[in-house]
Length: 467
Image 1 (cartoon, one colour):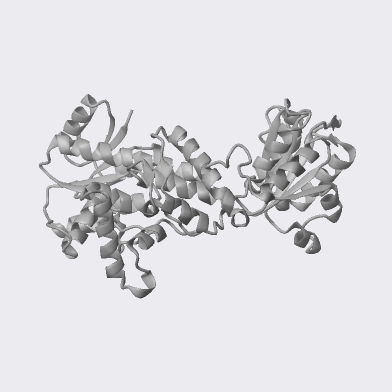
Image 2 (image 1 turned 45 degrees about the vertical axis):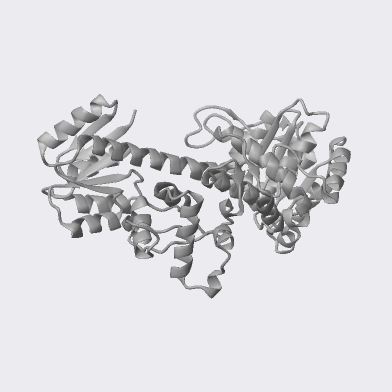
């Protein structure tokens, strides 16, 4: 059920919206001013907020600015009986999603609130998906380096030796670990993957070795460690280079004695699991710098497997891309899509500093942008590390409205940013998007990651059509 907060000092407005939205199956909480609204927001999460501009004690503008400063992601629809354009502009620049004047059409308010809430949930879901996009479930490729890697995996899997897997971020180190496990005699046993770098240093020992009841504050019951849960299977320690030095001593003991002791425990437990580890760091340098124990390094590095980066096996990109596209279509519930020849050529020519993980992200964005069954070059967005996808800032962002263009869009237009003014690039990008979307402004705005209000303004500014 969608939850909406209504903050307005007029009781009849609050009651009317509560009744109206209740008929639509929404749950409505009301507040008579900004102070009460803030208290409600501290205690609950809402899918959307309807906020009156002028109220006693704390007005809507002040509450809006507090909402934004606190990082509350609920979209805000401002309402006001005053028709001052400056108030609307200020609210939108401060972060409001939309602005309506009283008296407003009830159906319009419902539509705006529902759309704003659904759009925010969609954006959050897409961000979550992009952050958790998994590597292919199996090793994909027929390049010489991958064939050689498969041969090594087959030989290593027949042993119980510890293996150190190295390679750049996103190359698929866990995939290789799973391949080793799947081809081993313990394939029917658990495969337990542990991301050392993603765990708080103080929790790593408890997670790996477990703890007894009362071992520390909050240890209300006995908890088995991951080494125990792995049984006779495989435990994969990813980002081993991030393991704290004190814990390295204990892991060395596990490798030497094949036994563990839970935190707070008084007896040792045997370890049957095979240990595989991985790092994207230069572990030799870590040893030389004293940040990784040399004796532990030799214990882990019985067999070393290096995974080549994607740029060293570009001939595998078409196979991987088709595999990833199929997985994305299944996961996202979309009709099958294929890559056009030019798009595939563009993918194969790109260096992919983020390797397979970056390829997955590029294809997922293409799935979102592309409205046809054929993915073209214009649908490809090669975002740089630590850089959001360029977009035209909406009026609520407080930034100047400059249309940013993805690398794929600039290339599809055929002009380089270095030789054009930003206005030229902006105009061409909007024209290209309109052409791609057959003149549909809403779809073109969505493709560029901007609001419909922004694209209408730009279309008028650049004379690309009637407003």
